[in-house]
Length: 353
Ligand code: ATP
Ligand code: MG
Ligand code: FE
Image (cartoon, rainbow, N blue to C red; front, side):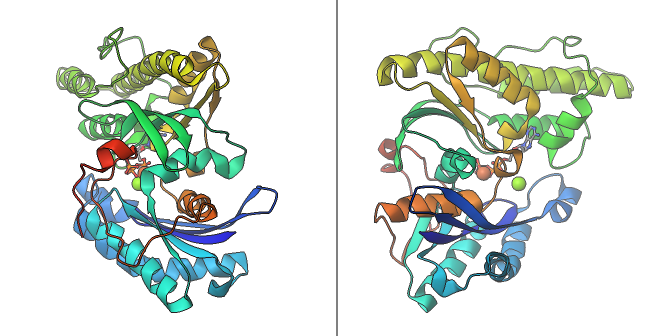
């Protein structure tokens, strides 16, 4: 099965081609990503209108480039997949409309992919991944723990009560003037910092359940920053290191609680802990999660860095997995601003577009 996947839900325009061979092996035949950092940098964050226009301009060209890179033609595809949410609707439309046009023109099925399912399946791009597994989805817009039981079958165990972890990275980086995008900038700044210098809260530490909270941490970091007279490079590095460590510590502690719950509910056979999403690209976060997993007898599985942040390979892969189950969509598939991964709440969700 060979699928062309398109992605445009935030500020990466992307097209990729993924093949599942008869033996189940996954091959990424093309993987094109076009970031928009320079367009958004002057504003310190993603501007939806700018993103939507840039996606619309890039999508056609990217799809063509992915085909050229793979040496295949549209007719070699078994389906066309595109993210259809959640995300900035103006942006989501770009990939979805392009995919609809290609699917209609070439007479191929359309697969409207949940972007979060793309992240959830992303470690499978580089190796085997067996259901069920515990999933920490940690990105710019989401921080959730889910039991992944199969393609399209996710049960939420916990989620953030306020900000996403990626948002905490981005907003703190912005306050500290580290530039955009904030997460990677904060990680670079933290490199030689002393994480123990500033005292930061441990949100929800020891509390039952496995929800997250990052708003208090973000506020505490801003107060420390505002309290520094003329911050030196050392102040900046120490605070960045402290914030990064506090986020990593909280993600690990809450995940540890979910591991205990998951092991109880899903039996002693499933001890795989998957982390996916942009924040999974952070080395301190990965290290903390690895240690926590080891403590609970879990094995951490994370995609390579390039497939942590937004890409279309994960969307094409989700398309392949859905197609293998005969699960395709009509050309009326809507673009959705919100689209929870777990089915129970998906029913209650408003559909836009
Ligand atoms: P969602 O997937 O929830 O819709 P998104 O697609 O915008 O949101 P991703 O592209 O998966 O999110 O991840 C982007 C987020 O990851 C940003 O918040 C970014 O700052 C963060 N991020 C990326 N790299 C790093 C890093 N090295 N350290 C910390 N955070 C990072
Ligand atoms: Mg991005
Ligand atoms: Fe994402």
